Image (cartoon, rainbow over all chains, first blue to last red; front, side):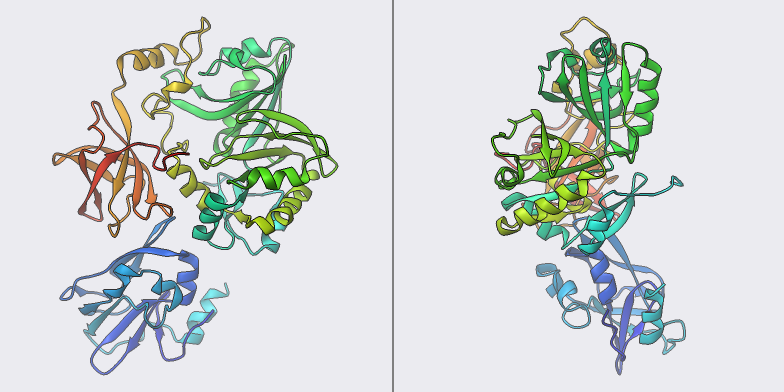
Length: 125
Length: 366
């Protein structure tokens, strides 16, 4: 499984890429494999405020709907609208064009998140 | 569920093929191999091979077997000629469904039942009470292999491994054949809405037939398929799943399957008066087809359904149809149900999504 080094991970299989003033959130390669072909995505509207661990999006395959949790607290600034026309981006490019939403972090805290190697270790259990 | 999980007798084949296994009704079964969408498409366009070893296979024999089954099942076993099969129900006293099943007649005093994994033990308990010198039942979970070969190319693939001089059975018929050196029953039935076959055999022969079919079907585009594709294929064909669209509380008439209840015959069976009354005068609830639009959240089991702003029932099975590209669902609603084409809504995560009433058979010409 691909787990890029520059990302922070949640145990619930989301990643966040922290940049200057915002964080980009998606689901991991492992998560997209487990979900199989994504056919529908429910994304949060810009302006929504969330706490870490809140259900913030839903990703659906033919088989099931899966909740996505916010890895960090903040205010949603943008949703990836390309996904409504092509939800398969999540499967093909989980760490790039398949991102879900961006948010403005409420704090700089990432202690509750995992590094790439820590996250990869959780998958081996 | 705390029931111990049994391995499918074909598990070794599946793991070698890279299947993802999940527990289902006490069995560890493949949910997908190459991917649900691919498997679904292969079955619609070429052929798919499904492990159905979890399904109960029960042999019923004896001079009193016909009378015994007549007293239990909703469709009339006496209608079956040798080599013929039909869909039937074991109803409870209230007309609800203990199990839906396929009943085949193998001989004058020999029948073969294929039942759901989740109801196999219960079915055995019911049958045991009827057992005696005139009626014997054999078939415990884990003692047999079953597989379904489905799709427009299923007949051509199966023909390759049939013994020389043998012919494939016609729709809803069953034949005994030697396959890969073992005894097998081959029926032209299935759960996908496609032409296809179900093959029932022993633990030793099963893996050989499975491997041989995979190989024989490869040039035609056959793929091994998991439970995921099995569910999306059956729902597109409008076929009910016991435990969702049928249950102890949902009668076959309410599920839209009243056709398979025979009320012309003299002998009684459990729930007969309720079912007869519902067939003649209508049932308090009815099952409708529901379709949503492309790009909308798909309908799922348990979602409430609304008509004219009022809740009229719930979705019993629903998913985004791989073939059609929009959501399809079966919904159990109060009678009278809104007519074909009427607007509906269903609720997803607190939001109402527009839909309309459709036929329950979502794919036409199948």
